[in-house]
Length: 311
Image 1 (cartoon, rainbow, N blue to C red):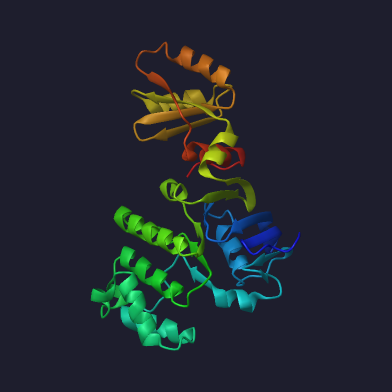
Image 2: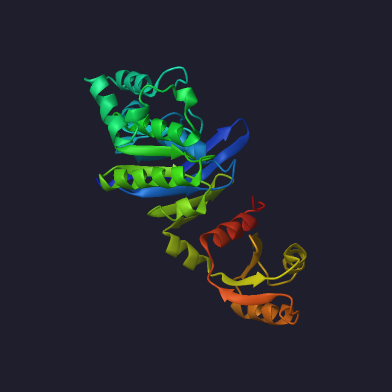
């Protein structure tokens, strides 16, 4: 692998990690350009968190090589840690300290010259000034998330690694969080974020999907949907669970998934799927309409191909 250029924030090749005899990350390669919001998707246990920890210097790969912010992930982990903000899944600040005290403490840990001023600037930027003296333990999930984001951006990192930061947070708080992420990216910050939410994935500039530690696909949303080459029908009507079972057993159907009050049925063989639709449309109880495959359709299909079940 050649040295990463100045516009590349992350470039790794063949990353592999074992925990005991279990291979958690399997020969993973990826490249992330600076200033990009890069979405990292996959089911629980797919290796997302382990990969993130290798990128930021908290874990050493058992095989593979690469750079993060121009520094070698094998030999320059200390330099990487100084320049990366990492927001974990679990809230990791101190519940018995106020918001202001938490931020001032983090500023001192990073050795910032004016910790009080740095904390105040973060409070203003994130809209937390009127809550500055509230205990962190009293905050809702959305406000805890905002506080954690403020803490990991205090030292002005060049790269932000976010590990499922909006899990369990209400929709409005998620939207507010993502608005802030886009503002940070517009200022030049590179963001790698793991998520389970399709609407969040679609807000990323590029996305990657991994399962069982292997990278299955990467690209823009449009590229990934186009590459899947799925023809899709949307079916409405009664008893969709029973219909789903029948369709799943029908040769030529590659993906069946229930979305609310509609069933998405997909196949890479468009002509065969048209035949199936005509055959099943003989039952007037169900309405079959051609539709465009969604990103979620593609990921469910990928999960099925990888041997997993939709979650």
